[in-house]
Image (cartoon, rainbow, N blue to C red):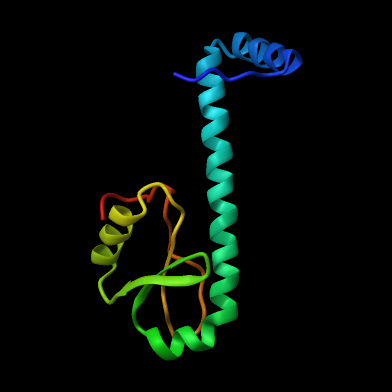
Length: 123
C-alpha cells in the first residue's frame, strides 16, 4: 500500500469532519477521491460531447442509426446493438470514460457515460 502525504491543515480538517460525521478518515478520503474521479470523468464526457457535435455532420453521414463509442474525439467502435457495443467497450476500456451515443437525425446528448453507473439494471 502506498503512503499519501497531506498538508497538516488539510489532514486536521479531514479529521474534524470525520469526527463530526462519525466516520473514519479512510471513508472520508475514499468518498472524496471517488467524487473527484467522477467529476474528472464527467468533464471528459462533456469534452467528448462537444467533439461529437463538432463532427456531427460527418458522423451522421457514416453512422446514422448506429451507436458509436467515442474516445479522444475518435470513433473507437460502433454497432447497431447497444448491449453488444457496451460490452465490447467495457472489455476494452474498463476504467476509462467513453461516450456512447446513438447517431440520430438530430444531434443529441450522450446516452451513456462509461465509468458512471447506469440506472435500471444490467446491460
